Length: 479
Ligand code: BG6
Image 1 (cartoon, rainbow, N blue to C red):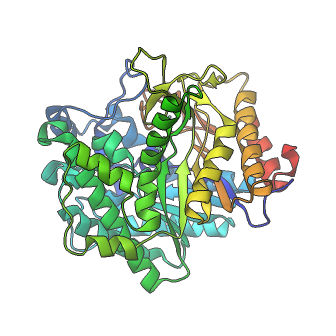
Image 2: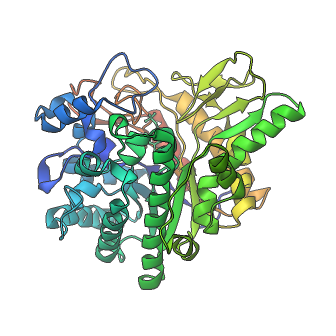
Image 3: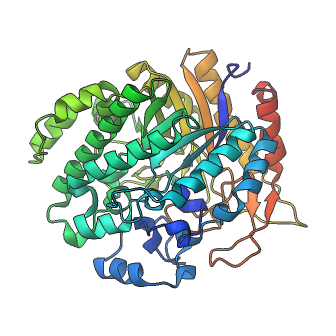
């Protein structure tokens, strides 16, 4: 078995986790720039007290804030892209930092230095035969919009995102043919500060505000998609959510009903962007919980007219759910917590490893939407060790091989139209949830520790040559 001929296989990153250069080229701070590294954080830190955010915003001691430094891709991008090219990447999923283009989010004209940086990156990718796939917003809202408007709670952000989205489409429609509007758009209801810039103390009714903010993001996304379709018909623009796959704990009907309800909630985010309307289960949930989301006059129509060309998601782990109220044995995964699965192994960070779940998810998403699907993130975070200048990461090879085999089966056995796979964290970077450096995903090791010490030298891990061979053989070597 092989992947289809033009299968887009490569790697995935986000601006805030790799770029650094946080004060260069006129960039403004983002909501992710205020988290300090904290040894005590094990499973993730997704919100901070208002006072801490304000203090951090004024703090020029950037060394304390890992996401301000990234891995210095800002200065190293040419060499890093050459390494990706050596692996044969056909696609590189990256994001544009909104605050490089509009430093406070409210400028009337874009920052030319920010645009130039990304133009250079795209040209370097193309010169190396790599297709860029760009996420417009990957958890890095300009901090000024969080402080002034409480982020996406305010409708004002719809207009500001529209301006930003149109600006980067106009600037880069020739270089970039694949776009995603929001990374893991469901994050807004799970981790509202990171997903939508909403600060707890500034939010009076959090549940209500989260759904309102998410509605604003859906509308903003649909407006930008409409614009892309009208002006640049050769562009493909998609949505992206966290795939929180759940299995029922037993074959008890109650457990399966609970699982179905949670699955419907999980797909509801993509439903809005793929079908252009809210699913009944979500509307009913709002009714039950007394949530009333305000729709502006044209919103329904905007959602209808701004549906996506493709579906993408991140997939790291699966969880288990059951109906009972008894105490449960829990396991954390990307953004959600669920029950443990005794049949699965876990990563060092407690995420349950389930390659078959990826085939399951691909089938579920393709069957539901019948639009091309794309695996935007999948990867293993591991505390690698360097021995004599080498990193023997067989565990990572095993993880990726097992997941890619399932992608292959979904395509070849089940007929899923999956057009690509980007391994998350193809180069070591700052972890999203914990701001650690030791939670490494890369095929390329970066010599930097949790505190920012190190030469930042790039070293090829064993998985580097292995992934290169996978791409070269178009997956034939997986058998
Ligand atoms: C996804 C995010 O939720 O998970 C990434 O889109 C993040 O930004 C990735 O890095 C893995 O999570 P973490 O916390 O291990 O980096």
